[in-house]
Image 1 (cartoon, one colour):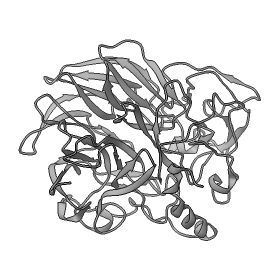
Image 2 (image 1 turned 90 degrees about the horizontal axis):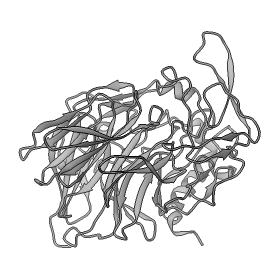
Image 3 (image 1 turned 30 degrees about the vertical axis):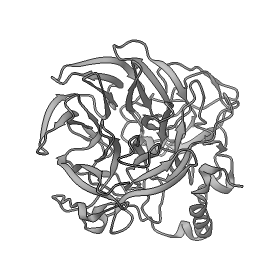
Image 4 (image 1 turned 90 degrees about the vertical axis):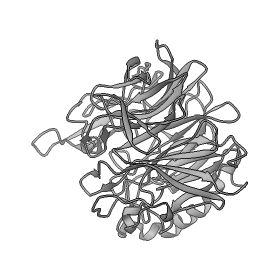
Length: 486
């Protein structure tokens, strides 16, 4: 019998199996592989929602919004990232959404991206991704005073400092890994950070022992036609040795960490994640996290790894870079990329047996910020509502139809995933269909009463063969409310 979190993915797996033979010969059809002519127009009528609910527009014209929280005054506060893939830099900002939908700037920064916000006792807490200077955790007063609670998080690579969520006097954040699957390669050059930080690499949270395999890659840092060999957890061009020990430290890559709300030393909560983006405490008072999984790119590509929703056990290792959930990447029948060998283990020993995830979400869906329903007036109490940013194909790997670009509802007890908020015109963003619905949902959060779900829509992001193309000023804050009794 299939384990519960995998049941809902079985039909998708069958489709994948039936199309594998012709997959290499078909063109990618990602949601961002389209054109866009602004300005963006939004219309709730173009968004389909589960019966009994209504969709509303709260605010438009945001630039790269990533998170929403609510102050003591009940108003929404939104983080604008200040950075987007494609090496587009703006100014990271915390803005207050006024009753009329206008934006009031509360605070600005200079170390983007700002990847989410939470509120506690009147203050706002921001995860600063720090693609240039390293990640930090910020505390911002309603008057705009900014203080640093922790710094030095390893966020200059592919993934950044995410979250946060505040609970019991601590700020919890997720820290993504530097690479796709522990090896620095050509894709790292494409992300823009390898020329800036040629010595950058992933840092484990505890000592690990390597198998010793290295991966040969053309060297984009030289003018000549040269190649280099790079090992896991090593800088570009540094080969691994059999039984090599890589020392762990905190802060580290692929981890959930926490710091007191007044500041202090970072503490490790759990590790072995790839990109733990969204954090939320569930009705069982346990911490849950969404984890963006491997891509089919770089020196150690991985095929067919759906994003995961984890229930977090403190102190545990969650499988990256050798497992997807509790399944080893050495499973060639599933994780072998077309016309490439299956990934082998890079760790000689594993800290513990990986756990089974609470749910498996769509491959390349980029399942990000989420929250739990907790009010009978909204319904679906105890279910998680997850915003799915959507694919970044073809750079992350080929897709035959756009995954994500929606909000899904997850029963964390069974692992069953169902659509909650989608575009009426079909899969993919509104820009793909020329409509006025959702583009890229990146976060979902209930208001303090729990009766309205707010959805942060990052805005239009096209994807070319060369790089992503994010469009400033196209972000939207949506709200979903009950129109009929549950």
